Length: 61
Picture 1 (cartoon, rainbow, N blue to C red):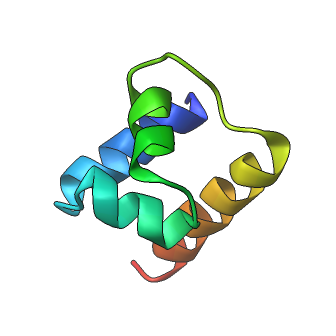
Picture 2: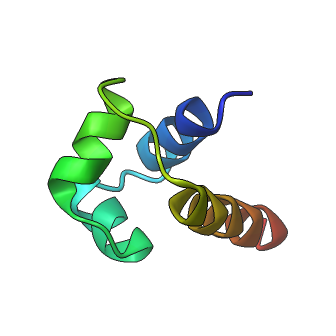
């Protein structure tokens, strides 16, 4: 699954706002909004942190 689609699915399932998600990942709201709207893609370091967030949440299930 596409990393951004997975991130959006995680966000919606857990009722997390884009603003809160941005805080969790250490980026701005605008950055998250651009990712989710397909305007930009995360840089490698951002991808790493997204994967870690999703992995951490999977382990807690």
